[in-house]
Image (cartoon, rainbow, N blue to C red):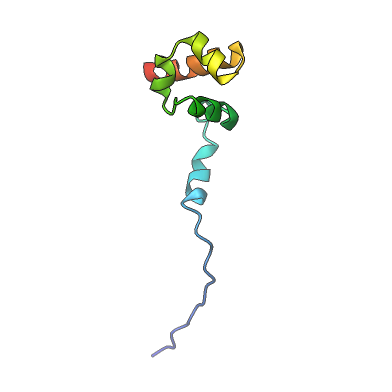
Length: 87
C-alpha cells in the first residue's frame, strides 16, 4: 500500500462571502442603483425619519426646514425613495 500525503493549509480570514459576491459585481446592469450619503441619512434620522416611508409621508417644505438640507438634495432623496416603492 501507498503512503497518504498530508497537506497543511493556512486558514484565510472570514470574508462574509465577499469573494463570491465579487464575481457578480462586474456583471453588466448591476451598477445601477442609488447611494445616499450618510450625512443626509443622519439628518433625516435626527428628525425622526428613520424609514423611507416616513420621509415620503412628511411635507417637502418641512423636510427642508427641519433638516437644513438644500431643496435639490431633498428633492433627489424623495425621488429616489419614490422610485424604490414604484418597483
